Length: 198
Image (cartoon, rainbow, N blue to C red; front, side, top):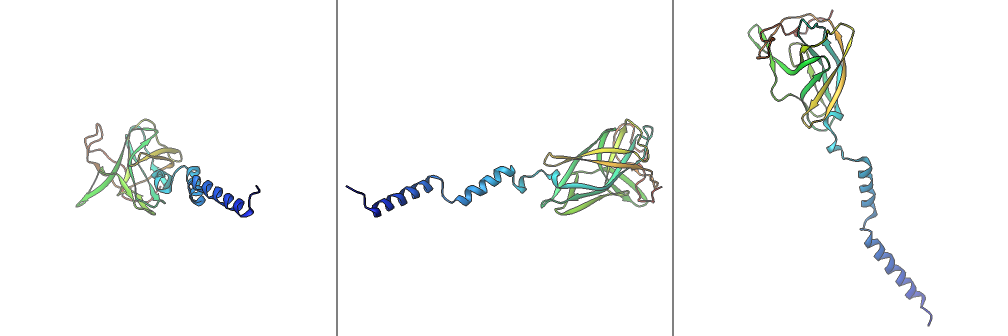
């Protein structure tokens, strides 16, 4: 007995609808999922270090005999959320600390900064003489003017970023180090008052 054309059409439509249902519905959703898998992660999951940069980084020239110096520049966060630098390391220093400078009367004292350096979303945080800076201690090699040196920053999410800083001479006031670091308590901390470069 021949199959009526209408019956054949209905059967084909039913088969198509079952096939679509088995595929999970809206094909647009599947395309979005494929795109997400290809990128590997969403913007919110990206490491904080991916959005962090340092502009005009430099290090005050120093010798092993000086024992310590500092890194300056501007931390730039191009991400949509706050990023916090919690630690740093340097290729030629045994100890690296994140420091701030406090003033009482005419005296300026530097000390380790609790909580690191937060940088607001789409914002900046300066590292400058007389303010926040990265302190390099227990130098293992001289840092000569005109040379370059590598610094690595660690952020609160565990991600890291590395930058190269120019070493140059800098003159300014002396600040005492408020801490118990061996061989460095009450020593000259380096020139951090924002004087002119030489």
